[in-house]
Image 1 (cartoon, rainbow, N blue to C red):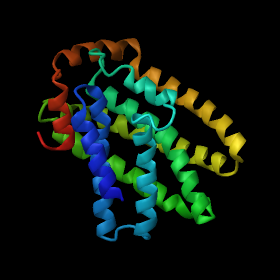
Image 2 (image 1 turned 180 degrees about the horizontal axis):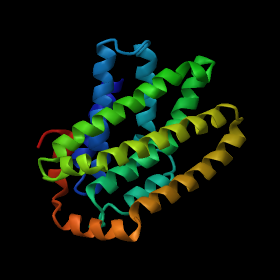
Image 3 (image 1 turned 120 degrees about the horizontal axis):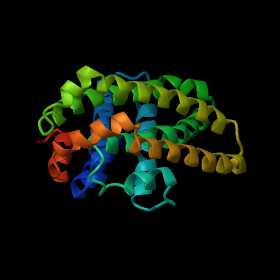
Length: 239
């Protein structure tokens, strides 16, 4: 399942001609890494991880393909795909924000219900997040092929900030999963509306950095490539 999902994410990325392709390009790398780890028996229960990782990715795919009503947090990321003022990393963070803060709690709670115990999937939850953190470093390396200072930004703190943001997001995602797991269907629907709104606020903040940072972003963006296909190829590791 997970290999087919990785291929689908790659197809989505390669079909895009704008920044909408950045996140699925990154995430195809994540899912491929998960698939390889399953093949190498890295996880305690490879089949359970296969189901969790596939269902996690499906939340994004279904929103992208309009199979479900698009959450506002995802729509917020797609509304700005043509905004040339945003850095590549901002587009990536918009996708990661929606996927980890909104999709992951749902996928985790669903996995907990299948297992009959949410705590039993905590190890899988942490493992997926560890793969995402590790893969971000590989993507930075490959992105350096088109953005020459990508690794320098990481050395100066960009990578640390990215991982810290991801750490905060994963902690909040687990807390949200705990709440969802304990709710009935009506309560879940109401809570997901609240969660969607909160994650949308984070998306807004990603696109509106504080004034000193915003000035640096404007300068840096002038030197980034504006060819989205080239960026997507770099994120896929094929540039």
